[in-house]
Image 1: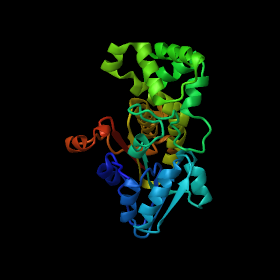
Image 2: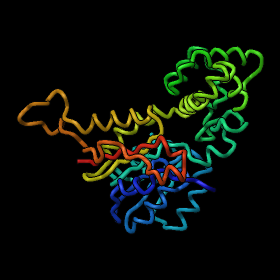
Image 3: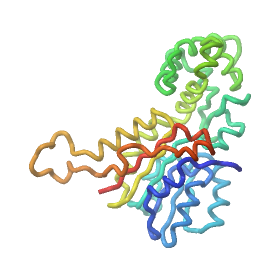
Image 4: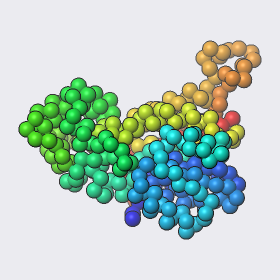
Length: 306
């Protein structure tokens, strides 16, 4: 199973790992980051979360060959606070989120990729009910236009949404190839091959199927509150929508509340909860970009609990 973990060295360094600390890999994937965290823990413990049961089965073998100081939890990362509470854990020393789709998910028959002809699926958790096929075939024109524009930032969202609604009246849209052909027909060959709107459309559908942005918005403030003083939270994003949410939350929790700015004495409850470790995001090196072109859009942001 080949999987390239983007910004791995930088992400592991960002956590400032202590050998007796408790850490959370919120996006286990194929254990690229988790295995490195586990190697550095001698008396601590790692909790790893993922929605993808295939990734969990693979990672179980990888991690068990390193140490037994871990537990994998099959759950969306928005459930981290509740699941940790069930384990008797109320504070941790570091949390890592890698929000990208893993290479195996892109490369296997899961409908994430527009490069091959696959069934329209795109579920991170194969037990979930909603699929890409359902979104494409049942959402109204207005709903499709909204997600393509909001989650894909695609300029020709209305054209694509209209063509999908027209095409599915003749027969259901069931494969990635069919969807790509519809997108090309909607926007015209010149625009299609110059700007590749299928990237944006597929991203938008994937976000909708897995409720990705709402998950991030929900969990980040809770993750910050889970950190011990000096604990680190590191987040790797892969597109502007994710990064905007992370940047906003980090800014919100690292600044003095506007209501009390300028007061000679700031009440404790209005003081910043975290400090920004890096004001500008860390991006892949030239060397990493040569090794893996998929890392091009990656950004790493880090905060530390005060």
